Image (cartoon, rainbow, N blue to C red; front, side, top):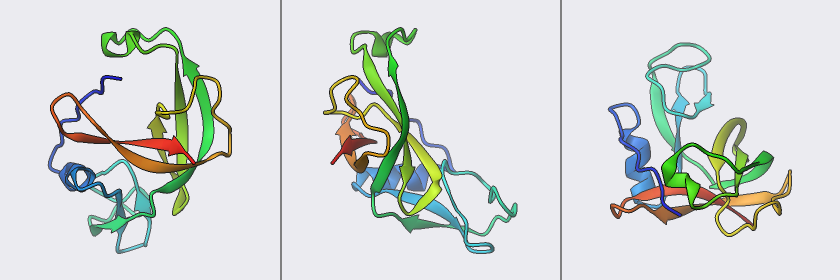
Length: 134
């Protein structure tokens, strides 16, 4: 499946640098100890700029999923239908990621199913994070 290659900005660059090392990190506010994703310049809870990065276990569960059958994105058209899942991070269930669940046949994802992060190669050789059922 072709992947959309992300373009990191100043805020998200540490996240994408870690993905290139096959590590999954999220921001952590040192003022209120809140983890957050996607990366933001300020804490989503207390608005502090006191953010650092925290490595995660890379484990999660499928919160919900749907089937993408008619995407208008040409890069996704050839791969349809495909799963589109919302994955909640075990380290903090308030953090969600989206994934097409590579390796899981369409319509065979399971709500509540355990997943782990995996790193897939993009056309330019960079890596992107995805989630696989375990």
